[in-house]
Length: 173
Image 1 (cartoon, helix red, strand yellow):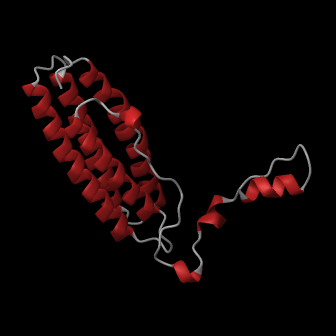
Image 2 (cartoon, rainbow, N blue to C red; image 1 turned 30 degrees about the vertical axis):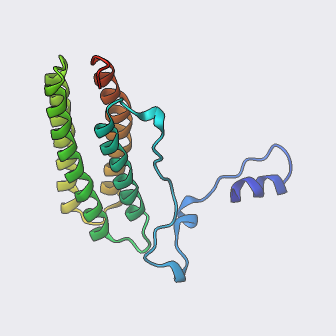
Image 3 (tube, rainbow, N blue to C red; image 1 turned 30 degrees about the horizontal axis):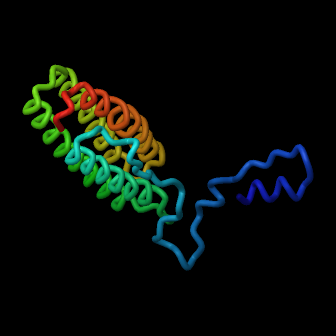
């Protein structure tokens, strides 16, 4: 908004970039609070069609938002970020187990491939967790975790792979 208003004040045909680093620094009275950067919002269109799995996906979004908030704390708090990532990783592990059991019960023909995808995602997450432990508070490690979360977990898995495998099941859900 600041960049837009500045561009409008300077006249037509102007481009003004926002300095996110300056904007993200918290004033003294909000130290320790997370400034708003971005939040994931669950929409009914994201549903895979199974209420229990959709509920777990919504919880994943909430935990992801906690991780995003902890990444933006000023001053940086690596312990808070690690705790948020650990909670998210625990939820993902449990979710994958529930999802595989449900797909097995429903007779999914794509279960083996989907379970392999789960193992790949968990291996990536554990690798990121180890990197973060080796470099506590590293902006690069936190950025890699957030990118993994947004790209691999939310976009590729929840919004693509899970919706596809549940859409292939008979509509007796």
